[in-house]
Length: 324
Image (tube, rainbow, N blue to C red; front, side):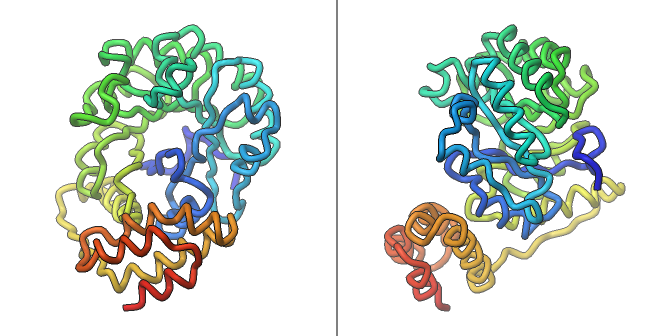
């Protein structure tokens, strides 16, 4: 297999959105086990922290070569020199690509001129892409939003980044001001794809395979984030549905049978085992609590079981609680 390229990667592209506190190595490997075609990203990592070699951040850069490729590291920051040095480190570690976060709407991130704040600073955004591209030979992509408070700036903003060397985009169909409220608007994303030559992936409000097929339109692929919470199996369904659509089977019906709780249990335990192997039992199980809470949503007795699962400290406790 040759070097990863956004341009040459098999279509349609299906990506797991980078999510802070969620897309750690255990979740990425778990998703890849369900849908190997999925392109996975790290949680977003500070270029300042990578530049200075912060221990926790450097640990978050580690990935399993055999289980996670293609593997994309998402970074954020505002110092071009730190982007350059961080990018070199990421490439040396063997990542397949670098993604720059220009879309996070969290107040703490934006107030530091990171994430969505860069939408209002197109020259700085362009400088950061250029510095990253200058440092490495692997692809550099950007994840951003429709705009600050309107989608009118999306196309000129992205065109500037293409000029700086951006190889691909993932666009969340909401503005900064919308955060995660209201319905995602994919129309500006379709128009962006018509006006630029690099791959464009759409993101926002994909919860089912039907959503993915309906929304992909003229885009190169889709990115799924919150729709995987409690239902990582949706990635397999999306990959299958988009492949069928690619082969002109868009109108054919195919219904997936909802997976039962009993069928879920071995997968849930597998996810727990990955978390423990990668982070140790104490930290691994504490971080699994949010996933365990999502996995049992909608099943009989979920409230009582959830109250116990959110307190687990050991893997054996989960095994005992999930005996069915």
